[in-house]
Length: 81
Image (cartoon, rainbow, N blue to C red; front, side, top):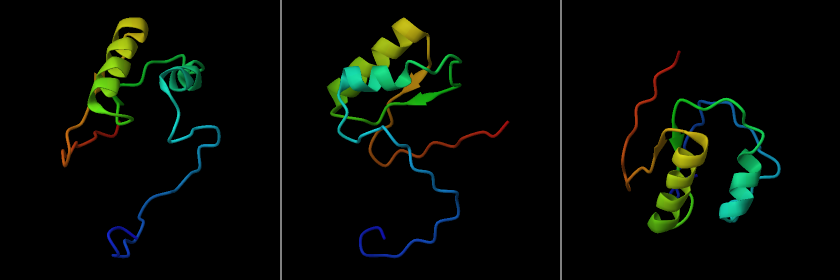
């Protein structure tokens, strides 16, 4: 249900145990530590804009990951390999 409208889910829904929507910068970095292969693209959507920019900058500098911080209502088309 989104804005009181029932939306049919056309995807597999998984629960990620151990990830909180309230994790801080260091908790998120700790959660990402086991990821040894760089994703093609990381979307940083957690926190206020300045916090998101700090997280993206850290991931780009320390992990060499390509990061994007989407704007409100931005649509991103994903390519499937």
